[in-house]
Length: 375
Image 1 (cartoon, one colour):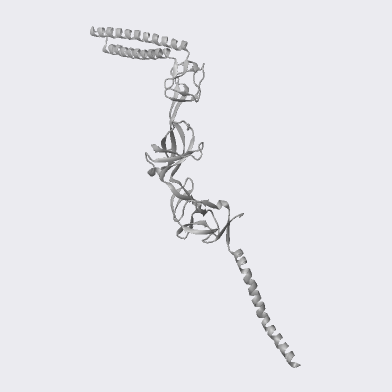
Image 2: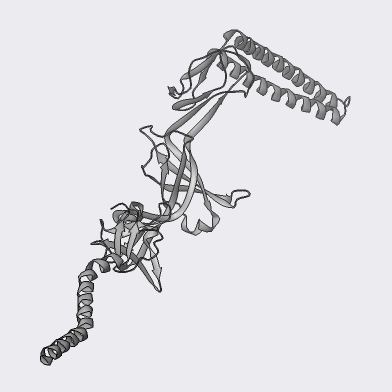
């Protein structure tokens, strides 16, 4: 009867000793089943926005001195009144195309003819005065020979003669001009071009030199711009410039420096440069604002990305490429930097179409898992 109890006792003791071991094994087994999903959830993940990913592109890059300036007509002429008189009519309007010699307006005939008659009368009067001066000089010369006049008298008579001769020449010139004006009362266009401004109207009373109209020729425009004087060493006649105009977004215009002002701009110490722009199709007009650069270096098919992709890590310049949901660290060598557009050439194991991380991203490192916000 004692043996069964001993056996049961021994069995109970054995089970009691084994229970902690079995508990530990079950716990380890349970932990083993939870390891994979928990480790996946605990792996660091860099969450980014769509704006923090950019694509590498093949594009033209330029570097150089930036400038801003204004387009002006290649030729601009202010038409002014050539004589006193009443303007009968203005025959053109602003924006009209005109040819050299074309009548822009006309004067009233009556007053101009009166001026011509007055100029003719003035010439006759000057000639009469000249004849009197010639006679006076001859008389004085004879009196001097006879001892009845002093040498100073002859000098005075000869001076009057010279003055009378000059007066005749002036009166003749006035008569010729007045006759020409009376014959042609038109206001001719001085150049081929377009009427830019009309400052008077028919019936206006004009005096010599009064402004009437402005005619411009925009088949060639001139870009007038300034650059810092420090950049003078990189600017020369023939240097390429590249610029854009707000009226034509996304379009690039090119030219060459044609002239450089020999003095700096007062107060700013900027150097003014001039570039002639062909405009035979008439797309551009004077007065447009332009921004651009004097091109020091360029690359037509550079592998490039925004400057914000560059990161300095120690002595290396690197970028981080998005590859298979992870960030891949790539050492690169920056090339040509386009300051105007904020792009930089990337030299290394990188190609157009690659996705790069851009901006300040705390925690970015090689191999880190990357997830876009909202995915």
